[in-house]
Amino acid sequence: MASKITETLQLNDVVKTYVMGTEEVHALRGVTLSIQNNEYVAIMGPSGSGKSTLMNVIGCLDIPTSGTYSLEGQMVADMSESQLAEVRNRLIGFVFQTFNLIPRADIFHNVELPLIYGGIPRAERRERAERAIERVGLADRMKHKPNELSGGQRQRVAIARALVFEPSIILADEPTGNLDTRTGDEIMAMFDELHASGQTIILVTHEDYIAEHALRTIRLKDGLIESDEKHGKLRRARDVPDVVLAASQVAV
Ligand code: ADP
Ligand code: MG
Image (cartoon, rainbow, N blue to C red; front, top):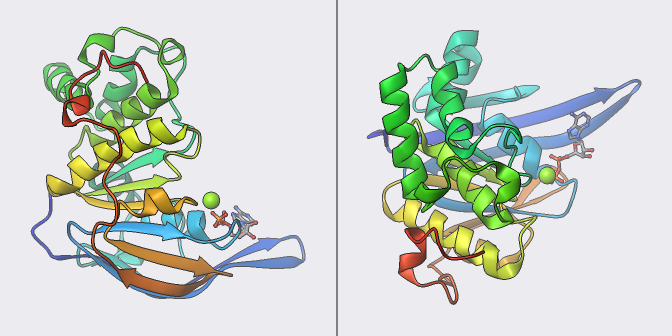
Protein backbone atom coordinates (compact mmCIF):
# COMPACT_ATOMS: atom_id res chain seq x y z
CA MET A 1 0.00 0.00 0.00
CA ALA A 2 1.28 3.46 -0.80
CA SER A 3 2.10 5.22 2.44
CA LYS A 4 0.33 8.39 3.50
CA ILE A 5 3.47 9.60 5.28
CA THR A 6 5.07 12.05 2.88
CA GLU A 7 8.67 11.71 3.98
CA THR A 8 9.39 8.18 2.92
CA LEU A 9 13.06 8.05 3.74
CA GLN A 10 15.74 10.20 5.31
CA LEU A 11 19.49 9.51 5.39
CA ASN A 12 21.68 11.65 7.58
CA ASP A 13 25.44 11.67 7.06
CA VAL A 14 25.46 8.00 6.10
CA VAL A 15 28.92 6.44 5.92
CA LYS A 16 29.59 2.92 4.70
CA THR A 17 33.08 1.55 5.03
CA TYR A 18 33.97 -1.97 3.99
CA VAL A 19 36.97 -3.55 5.64
CA MET A 20 38.93 -5.78 3.29
CA GLY A 21 41.74 -7.39 5.27
CA THR A 22 43.87 -4.44 6.34
CA GLU A 23 42.31 -2.07 3.81
CA GLU A 24 39.24 0.10 4.22
CA VAL A 25 36.99 0.86 1.25
CA HIS A 26 34.99 4.04 1.72
CA ALA A 27 31.91 3.27 -0.34
CA LEU A 28 29.79 6.10 1.13
CA ARG A 29 31.51 9.03 2.83
CA GLY A 30 28.59 10.97 4.32
CA VAL A 31 25.38 10.97 2.34
CA THR A 32 22.48 13.17 3.47
CA LEU A 33 19.33 12.79 1.49
CA SER A 34 15.58 12.68 1.87
CA ILE A 35 13.08 11.22 -0.54
CA GLN A 36 9.36 11.88 -0.33
CA ASN A 37 6.47 9.66 -1.14
CA ASN A 38 5.85 9.21 -4.90
CA GLU A 39 9.18 10.69 -5.98
CA TYR A 40 10.82 9.29 -9.12
CA VAL A 41 14.58 9.36 -8.57
CA ALA A 42 17.50 8.35 -10.77
CA ILE A 43 20.85 7.70 -9.12
CA MET A 44 23.82 8.11 -11.42
CA GLY A 45 27.59 8.19 -11.13
CA PRO A 46 30.70 6.37 -12.29
CA SER A 47 31.32 2.72 -11.52
CA GLY A 48 32.46 2.36 -7.92
CA SER A 49 30.93 5.67 -6.81
CA GLY A 50 28.67 3.95 -4.27
CA LYS A 51 25.35 3.64 -6.11
CA SER A 52 24.70 0.00 -5.25
CA THR A 53 25.88 0.52 -1.69
CA LEU A 54 23.40 3.37 -1.34
CA MET A 55 20.62 1.20 -2.77
CA ASN A 56 21.53 -1.60 -0.36
CA VAL A 57 21.37 0.79 2.58
CA ILE A 58 18.03 2.22 1.41
CA GLY A 59 16.71 -1.32 0.95
CA CYS A 60 17.87 -2.36 4.44
CA LEU A 61 20.07 -5.05 2.89
CA ASP A 62 23.11 -3.39 4.42
CA ILE A 63 23.55 -1.20 7.50
CA PRO A 64 25.51 2.05 7.58
CA THR A 65 28.84 2.16 9.40
CA SER A 66 27.72 5.49 10.85
CA GLY A 67 24.98 8.04 10.32
CA THR A 68 21.26 7.49 10.59
CA TYR A 69 18.57 6.20 8.30
CA SER A 70 14.86 6.49 8.95
CA LEU A 71 12.24 4.83 6.84
CA GLU A 72 8.60 5.92 7.07
CA GLY A 73 9.39 7.69 10.31
CA GLN A 74 11.19 4.81 11.97
CA MET A 75 14.92 4.51 12.63
CA VAL A 76 16.20 1.47 10.76
CA ALA A 77 18.92 0.91 13.39
CA ASP A 78 16.17 0.37 15.97
CA MET A 79 14.32 -2.24 13.95
CA SER A 80 14.41 -5.88 15.01
CA GLU A 81 15.46 -8.62 12.58
CA SER A 82 11.83 -9.54 11.98
CA GLN A 83 10.87 -5.91 11.34
CA LEU A 84 13.74 -5.64 8.87
CA ALA A 85 12.63 -8.80 7.12
CA GLU A 86 9.13 -7.37 6.92
CA VAL A 87 10.45 -4.13 5.42
CA ARG A 88 12.55 -6.01 2.84
CA ASN A 89 9.70 -8.27 1.90
CA ARG A 90 6.69 -5.97 1.99
CA LEU A 91 7.60 -2.29 2.12
CA ILE A 92 10.25 -2.36 -0.60
CA GLY A 93 10.21 -4.11 -3.96
CA PHE A 94 13.60 -4.89 -5.53
CA VAL A 95 14.43 -5.11 -9.22
CA PHE A 96 17.94 -6.12 -10.31
CA GLN A 97 19.96 -5.83 -13.50
CA THR A 98 20.17 -9.60 -13.86
CA PHE A 99 16.46 -10.23 -13.11
CA ASN A 100 17.30 -12.84 -10.42
CA LEU A 101 14.54 -15.26 -11.41
CA ILE A 102 14.56 -18.93 -10.46
CA PRO A 103 15.24 -20.76 -13.74
CA ARG A 104 13.42 -23.99 -12.93
CA ALA A 105 10.27 -22.30 -11.61
CA ASP A 106 7.56 -20.99 -13.90
CA ILE A 107 6.59 -17.33 -14.03
CA PHE A 108 3.67 -17.76 -11.65
CA HIS A 109 5.85 -19.43 -9.04
CA ASN A 110 8.62 -16.84 -9.39
CA VAL A 111 6.14 -14.07 -8.67
CA GLU A 112 4.37 -16.03 -5.94
CA LEU A 113 7.58 -16.73 -4.00
CA PRO A 114 7.71 -13.58 -1.82
CA LEU A 115 4.12 -14.33 -0.79
CA ILE A 116 5.10 -17.83 0.32
CA TYR A 117 7.93 -16.34 2.41
CA GLY A 118 5.41 -13.82 3.72
CA GLY A 119 3.11 -16.60 4.93
CA ILE A 120 0.20 -15.62 2.69
CA PRO A 121 -2.43 -18.35 2.23
CA ARG A 122 -2.66 -20.12 -1.12
CA ALA A 123 -5.85 -18.54 -2.48
CA GLU A 124 -4.67 -15.03 -1.72
CA ARG A 125 -1.27 -15.85 -3.19
CA ARG A 126 -2.86 -16.89 -6.44
CA GLU A 127 -4.97 -13.76 -6.62
CA ARG A 128 -2.10 -11.39 -5.83
CA ALA A 129 0.43 -13.11 -8.10
CA GLU A 130 -1.99 -13.20 -11.02
CA ARG A 131 -2.86 -9.53 -10.53
CA ALA A 132 0.83 -8.56 -10.54
CA ILE A 133 1.54 -10.67 -13.63
CA GLU A 134 -1.44 -9.16 -15.43
CA ARG A 135 -0.22 -5.71 -14.49
CA VAL A 136 3.01 -6.25 -16.42
CA GLY A 137 1.17 -7.73 -19.39
CA LEU A 138 2.29 -11.35 -19.05
CA ALA A 139 -0.96 -13.12 -18.17
CA ASP A 140 -0.50 -15.59 -21.02
CA ARG A 141 3.03 -16.53 -19.94
CA MET A 142 2.32 -17.71 -16.39
CA LYS A 143 3.26 -21.33 -17.03
CA HIS A 144 6.40 -20.48 -18.98
CA LYS A 145 9.91 -20.76 -17.58
CA PRO A 146 12.17 -17.69 -17.55
CA ASN A 147 14.38 -19.08 -20.35
CA GLU A 148 11.33 -19.17 -22.62
CA LEU A 149 10.98 -15.40 -22.34
CA SER A 150 12.90 -12.49 -23.83
CA GLY A 151 15.08 -10.26 -21.64
CA GLY A 152 12.43 -7.57 -21.51
CA GLN A 153 9.77 -10.07 -20.53
CA ARG A 154 12.03 -11.49 -17.79
CA GLN A 155 12.51 -8.04 -16.36
CA ARG A 156 8.72 -7.56 -16.42
CA VAL A 157 8.41 -10.78 -14.39
CA ALA A 158 10.92 -9.36 -11.91
CA ILE A 159 8.85 -6.18 -11.70
CA ALA A 160 5.71 -8.26 -11.08
CA ARG A 161 7.55 -10.08 -8.29
CA ALA A 162 8.58 -6.72 -6.81
CA LEU A 163 4.94 -5.60 -6.89
CA VAL A 164 3.18 -8.58 -5.27
CA PHE A 165 3.07 -6.98 -1.85
CA GLU A 166 2.15 -3.58 -3.30
CA PRO A 167 5.24 -2.03 -1.70
CA SER A 168 5.42 1.74 -1.29
CA ILE A 169 8.97 1.89 -2.67
CA ILE A 170 10.49 0.23 -5.74
CA LEU A 171 14.31 0.04 -5.80
CA ALA A 172 15.83 -0.88 -9.14
CA ASP A 173 19.61 -1.23 -9.59
CA GLU A 174 20.39 -0.79 -13.29
CA PRO A 175 17.11 -2.46 -14.35
CA THR A 176 17.80 -1.82 -18.03
CA GLY A 177 21.54 -2.59 -17.89
CA ASN A 178 21.14 -5.93 -19.66
CA LEU A 179 18.55 -4.77 -22.18
CA ASP A 180 18.75 -3.12 -25.59
CA THR A 181 17.56 0.47 -25.96
CA ARG A 182 14.10 -0.35 -27.24
CA THR A 183 13.45 -2.92 -24.53
CA GLY A 184 14.90 -0.53 -21.96
CA ASP A 185 12.35 2.05 -23.11
CA GLU A 186 9.58 -0.46 -22.70
CA ILE A 187 10.67 -1.24 -19.13
CA MET A 188 10.88 2.49 -18.41
CA ALA A 189 7.34 2.94 -19.73
CA MET A 190 6.34 0.46 -17.05
CA PHE A 191 8.18 2.39 -14.31
CA ASP A 192 6.54 5.60 -15.60
CA GLU A 193 3.16 3.95 -15.26
CA LEU A 194 3.93 2.71 -11.74
CA HIS A 195 5.05 6.20 -10.75
CA ALA A 196 1.85 7.68 -12.18
CA SER A 197 -0.14 5.25 -10.06
CA GLY A 198 1.53 6.52 -6.86
CA GLN A 199 4.67 4.39 -6.47
CA THR A 200 7.92 5.82 -5.11
CA ILE A 201 10.67 4.76 -7.53
CA ILE A 202 14.43 4.92 -7.02
CA LEU A 203 16.56 3.53 -9.82
CA VAL A 204 20.24 3.38 -10.65
CA THR A 205 21.32 3.92 -14.22
CA HIS A 206 24.36 4.82 -16.32
CA GLU A 207 22.25 6.10 -19.19
CA ASP A 208 20.98 9.66 -19.54
CA TYR A 209 18.03 8.54 -21.63
CA ILE A 210 16.91 6.30 -18.74
CA ALA A 211 17.48 8.95 -16.07
CA GLU A 212 15.41 11.38 -18.12
CA HIS A 213 12.31 9.39 -17.22
CA ALA A 214 12.78 10.33 -13.57
CA LEU A 215 11.90 13.68 -11.99
CA ARG A 216 15.03 14.00 -9.89
CA THR A 217 18.63 12.96 -10.55
CA ILE A 218 21.18 12.38 -7.81
CA ARG A 219 24.78 12.05 -8.94
CA LEU A 220 27.30 10.28 -6.76
CA LYS A 221 31.06 10.63 -6.96
CA ASP A 222 33.53 8.86 -4.70
CA GLY A 223 30.83 8.07 -2.14
CA LEU A 224 29.46 11.60 -1.94
CA ILE A 225 26.51 13.37 -3.53
CA GLU A 226 27.92 15.53 -6.29
CA SER A 227 24.58 16.97 -7.39
CA ASP A 228 20.91 16.50 -6.62
CA GLU A 229 18.49 18.13 -9.04
CA LYS A 230 14.78 18.02 -9.56
CA HIS A 231 13.71 18.32 -13.15
CA GLY A 232 10.64 17.96 -15.28
CA LYS A 233 10.05 14.84 -17.21
CA LEU A 234 12.65 15.22 -19.92
CA ARG A 235 11.67 12.27 -21.97
CA ARG A 236 8.82 9.87 -22.39
CA ALA A 237 9.31 6.37 -23.62
CA ARG A 238 9.97 6.42 -27.35
CA ASP A 239 8.09 4.27 -29.79
CA VAL A 240 6.22 2.54 -27.02
CA PRO A 241 2.47 2.73 -27.44
CA ASP A 242 0.41 2.84 -24.25
CA VAL A 243 -1.11 -0.52 -25.04
CA VAL A 244 2.28 -2.20 -24.58
CA LEU A 245 1.71 -2.20 -20.84
CA ALA A 246 -1.10 -4.67 -21.26
CA ALA A 247 -0.07 -6.35 -24.49
CA SER A 248 1.93 -9.42 -23.63
CA GLN A 249 1.86 -10.63 -27.23
CA VAL A 250 4.25 -7.87 -28.25
CA ALA A 251 7.59 -9.55 -28.86
CA VAL A 252 10.42 -7.80 -27.06
P1 ADP B 1 28.64 1.33 -7.87
O1 ADP B 1 27.36 0.60 -7.70
O2 ADP B 1 28.46 2.82 -7.98
O3 ADP B 1 29.47 0.81 -8.99
P2 ADP B 1 29.35 0.15 -5.32
O4 ADP B 1 28.42 0.73 -4.33
O5 ADP B 1 29.08 -1.22 -5.80
O6 ADP B 1 29.52 1.16 -6.55
O7 ADP B 1 30.80 0.16 -4.71
C1 ADP B 1 31.40 1.29 -4.08
C2 ADP B 1 32.77 0.90 -3.56
O8 ADP B 1 32.61 -0.03 -2.49
C3 ADP B 1 33.63 0.21 -4.59
O9 ADP B 1 34.97 0.60 -4.37
C4 ADP B 1 33.44 -1.25 -4.28
O10 ADP B 1 34.56 -1.99 -4.67
C5 ADP B 1 33.26 -1.25 -2.79
N1 ADP B 1 32.39 -2.34 -2.30
C6 ADP B 1 31.07 -2.51 -2.63
N2 ADP B 1 30.56 -3.59 -1.99
C7 ADP B 1 31.58 -4.11 -1.26
C8 ADP B 1 31.70 -5.23 -0.37
N3 ADP B 1 30.66 -6.02 -0.12
N4 ADP B 1 32.90 -5.44 0.20
C9 ADP B 1 33.95 -4.64 -0.05
N5 ADP B 1 33.92 -3.57 -0.85
C10 ADP B 1 32.75 -3.30 -1.47
MG1 MG C 1 26.47 -0.92 -8.84
